[in-house]
Length: 255
Image 1 (cartoon, rainbow, N blue to C red):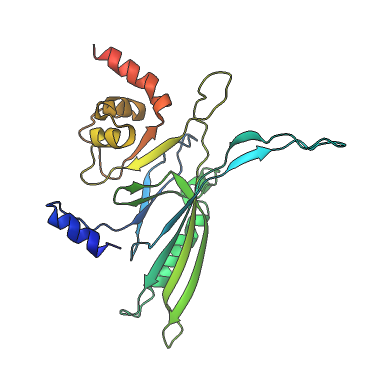
Image 2: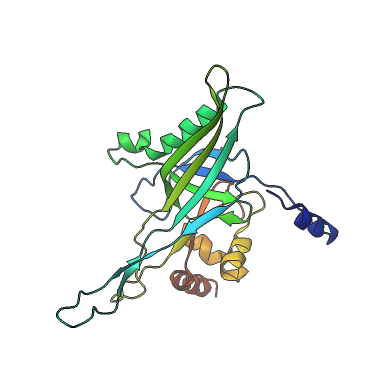
């Protein structure tokens, strides 16, 4: 929800404030098995009301050797990161129309927890992939791991017309390249869905602080014409250490 005080302050400073709705963009799973880039776009699930809060959770796996005799247990050993999780609530209301739109919206979200028909036909069952976006916020490439709907208002005929839906998105675990052949360290990636007004230089500046890295971003995504990237295109934004070799190759090619 827009903060009235912040909006007034922004307007007084001469900057335009634009109201944007949050949404979930659904995709088919990738056809080649890659977990870095989604397949074809599916439905776009817009929030009827923007969320009041978002909860992002990140954890790591640790192991501790059990001590024997009088010896205490050893120090914890880092085993790697666990997938990030994004928890959010969607408020649905049809009290003005008294129709079944709330039921349809809940059914759509519940359907995100089962394999898509395309992946099932390919005998590679996978739920749709999803990216949460709200203005300048772009979530990680994920899948919807759970949906819980609580109906709070009904018509006289028993049709639910108001609901609070809790949605949990879990980060897809990919296999990005290691930092070196022996470390096995994983390099994180983020996916940005192109919206109106987005440009590759702006993405590069926002992600890396260097607008000139747009060429490396284009090369990493196989984008031939960076000035004609369609709305809704999922652009993978590698970590700086993963992008560095690509940036070097692009810089060398431009000499």
